Length: 484
Image (cartoon, rainbow, N blue to C red):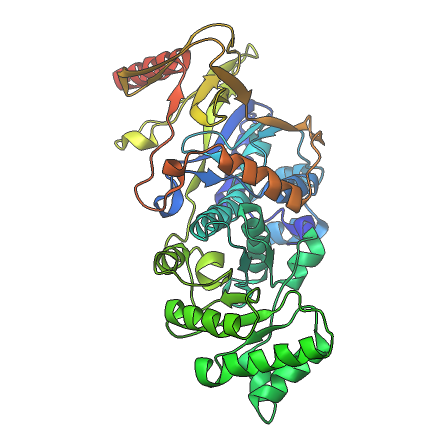
C-alpha cells in the first residue's frame, strides 16, 4: 500500500463537509472522534487490533499533491479559497490507539483522534479502511490458530484475496493473529515475516512421472522437501513415491529436516491417518503431514476431533477473505467538541437501536486483570480524567443492569490503561514494533483470556463496563436529548 498517495482515499462527503466547516469559520474547532466497533466478527468472543503501523504511515504522509489539487478543481464543487487552503494541509492533532496485537472488545475506542474538525473529518474513511480490514483478518487468524491447538498454521491466500493490498496487508494481519508464516513473498519482504511454501500440482505434471518430479524437488530443496502427494492417487502413488524419495535421501546421507507431505484434496482425516501409518512403518515418523483444501477454523476443529494426523495447516481463501464475516464493522463517531471557552463538551449520538447509542466524552480504557491468574476480569471504559486506585476496592457493574456487580478486593486485581499516545501535535511519538514482535505480544494477549472466551461457538463474553461517572454522563445526555 503506497501510503504516500492516499490523501484522496476518502469519501467525497468528508471533503464537502471540510469545505463547509471552512466556509462557516468552524475549521479550527477542536473535536474528538472515537474509532470502535460494535460486534465481534465471526461470533467470536474478542477481536485483535491491527493496522496501526499503516495508520501511522498514512497520517505522516497526509498531504494534497499537485495532482490531487488539480483533480479536485475539476469537480466543480470546491471554492478557490478552500482549494488554496488544501495546498498547505497537514495533520496537526493528537492520536491515541490501542497497540496492535491487543485483545479488544466492542465499544472500546481502538483509536482516538483529537484535532481540528477538518483534519479529524478527513481521516475518517482511511482510518476505518485500514483498521477494519487488518483487525478482521487478525481476528480470523486467531480463530483458525486456536482451532489448530498449537499446530503451526501457514497463510497462503494471496491469489484469492480482494486485490494486492488486501493480500499483502491481510497476510501481515494473519501473522499478527498467530500464523507461522505466509506464502506472500512481498509481505515477507516488507515486514520481515517468514515465507513458506511447497510446490503445485503443475510441478508434478510437468515431469514424465510423479517419482521423477519428487526426486528433482528433493534435489533442489533438500532442506525444505514437502511433497504434494495427491496429483494422481494419494495412497497408491503419492505417499509411496514420497517415502521412496525420503529413503533415497537418507541412504545418500542427506539430513532429513523440514520434510514431509502435503494433502490438498479428499478425506483429510482418513488420508492423514493412513499416510501417518505408512510413513511410520517406513521409519519416517517425524515427517510433516500438512493439509490445505479450503480449510477454516470449523473444518480444522472437526478434523482434530476425528483424530486427523495433520501437523501443519495451510489456510488460504477462508482466512484471507474472512469468508464467513467479510466486514469488521468499525465506526468513527464524534465524542466531544470544543466550545467558545476552550472546554470540551461531550457529544452523544442517539438511535432507535440501543447498540448504536454512543458513549460521550473523551474516554480511555482500563483493563482489569486477576492478579492470581493473570486473566482478564473485565474492561472499563472511563472518562479521560478518571483514575483507579489499586489499593482500594473496585466495584464493576453492568451499565444496562446495575444489579449485576463484581466487587474486587485490593491486591486481587491490577489495572492497565490500553490507549497509548501515537501522535502529539502532528508529530509521531510512538515506535512501531516489528510484526513478529507484535505476534509474540498477541500470543500473550490471547493467553490472558480463558478458553471459554476463545471457543469458536457461543463464547463466554468478557464484561466491558462503563465507570459510574461515564454512565451518569451518558444517561444525563440521553435525558437532555430526549427532552429536545
